[in-house]
Image (cartoon, rainbow, N blue to C red; front, top):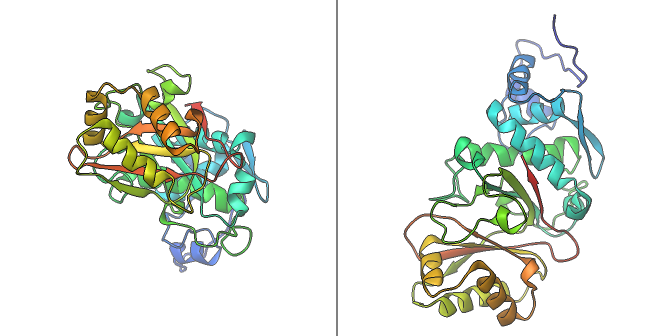
Amino acid sequence: MAREWHSTAVEIDETEDLIEACYENGWTDGLPVVPPTSERVERMLSGTDRDPDELIAAVPPKWGRATVEKVAINAVMAGCKPAYLPLILTAVEAMTAEQFNLHGVQVTTSHVGPMLIVNGPIREALDINDGFNLFGQGWRANATIGRAVRFVCTNIGGAFPGELDRAAFGHAGKYTCCIAENETVSPWEPLHVNRGFQADDSTVTVFAAAGPQTVNDHGSNTAEGILRTISANITAPGNSSGETLVVIGVEHAKTISGDGFSKTDVRQYIADTTKRYTVEDLLLTVAGGPAGRWSIVVPGWGSPSSRAVTLKV
């Protein structure tokens, strides 16, 4: 017996181009999508045991109903595998938590958007990139998981640019932004452990992220030298105060930890140096390629506008 569908079905003439039909209906992010046929949606739903009609959240600003089925439809359009669906559903729960303030994130004139940071065994199970070019192109899991979350924000939440999405500029990460922490090479405990979870828990952290900023320090050979460079970048004029994500590169992490700095020491040093952030404002991860003395700073929206949320998958 065929399953009863509760999402709106659109009949497309067989002579019509399905991708062009998605454009005409406003279902894309500007790039081509995978047409969400009933067969593809059924295949996507095989990735979870949750009831297709279960309501995950109401998504602002239009407060559309993000059921499991509707999230699955958007995951199909983004090009996801069924195995990604549980992580995407958890990310939707996280970004609709009150402290994240998705309504504000969706309609602000700032250029922030939801960014996902994945920790625990699920990183490797889903092959989420934590190394070379992790903020860039070329990795299916990163690209499509983040894109599915964006489709939920737009297609279900109604945040279309120039309408309810009032961002003055936006940034490329609003297409998709999903990374994993490189827990294997990190000299410190991972982000999700810092946030109260067990090391073997699989988690996703949703953070209201502005555009990533590169920190280039090929000259400093001490922890304090590198951290002074990072602190100067964080406090550059125009950067928001409040929560900030610091992705320390592998070479930088080796130098910093080699001088005896723990993660707590790093956060404390940045807080003391900048005199603008608390230790709790600083989300610290390790990721990136094994060579190159680079790190990344990702400013947030500013406290108390939004606070990151971490949930277990």
